[in-house]
Length: 501
Image (cartoon, rainbow, N blue to C red):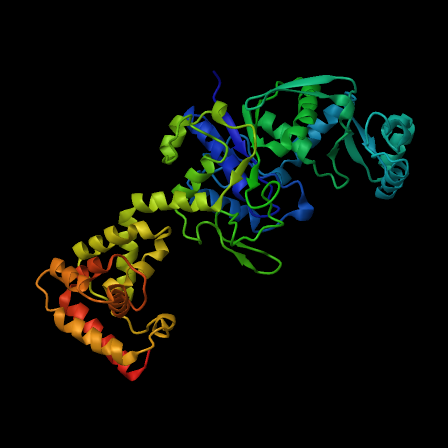
């Protein structure tokens, strides 16, 4: 068996999103599972939409996700350099000459205006215009002119593109590793442009030649590329090459909307799309990615793996190493999968629980920055008590601050509900005198004897925390101790007396 070689070949026309990273992940998993090679190739044939910061963004994203290639652009190159298509024009020209010589391709001199006129003619007839076998002999190309006329046009530098000459009437059958056999009649294929008028290869030519010359054995890419597969198969056949194994991944659908996820119509805060922060070059607008929103890269990757792949059981939490071991193309779904932000948050929460050490270090750093002394054992107890309440690491301080500092500000919405200030002060002082307890079981008994138990428990919580949030009140009192509890209650009484909140 030959070594498995897969590639991730993004176009630097913008930031890669969930779909692109998932494609990279599945390629990575397949290569690692069989000790193959995972290659990064930059497909920058679309120079009109090229963004200068997109390539560095791709490299940073893969690094943060922990799915870095072992060959290709930005990774020391490799035996098939260069790994960026704009530097491979000399390779494409060699192969395009072969196609022209063997009549698999032809020159087309039609101007944009010529083609627009044709489109309008067809539109008036209620038909769709397609540059294919039915119409190419009525257009301005080398198939419809003499050799002398062709040579004359080329010598005069008349602009042209080179198109692939599709042979009609063929029924192509391709076995997709996910979808099984797919058939297509070449009657419905148009003569794709292989070389643009600026001399730049198109995606169809560059992609096919690169996959062959880089010895790619498996092509895992999105479902939207199925229609391109057949023109690629014809190009492979024209060279006499065996095509790679194809696997087209299911679309990731927007659960809160219609159709597949898109960079063009999403609220990025409600529906995070990018792995790391993206900065729009034209506006300098920053769009947070999963990294900046507080997701662990492990959780992000685990979530992505489950968007279309299933191990065959109910298990959902996998380390990257475990994903490699369990991964199988046969277990990738055919149908589109819905992205659910709530599920993404759930994944991160599982990794919060698995990463208590990181929570400890984050909280310890927060305390040091605030010049707050702490005991390690106490800190671990605090984390154990509150970790179930957080989904993201940055939330830990908001759920634990009251263990370390007494409140200076109080939630005015609760205080505004206190109608009889004197009644509250009188009864809270009575309660305060009773707080000379010996155990917290005794304290619970004291509260149980109160007429308005729930209200006064809220008052005590409010005086301790500054709001009504927090874990079980008796746990808080036990953690901060009787002395600190009484101090905070007295401070709150003074606030009520002075009406300064």
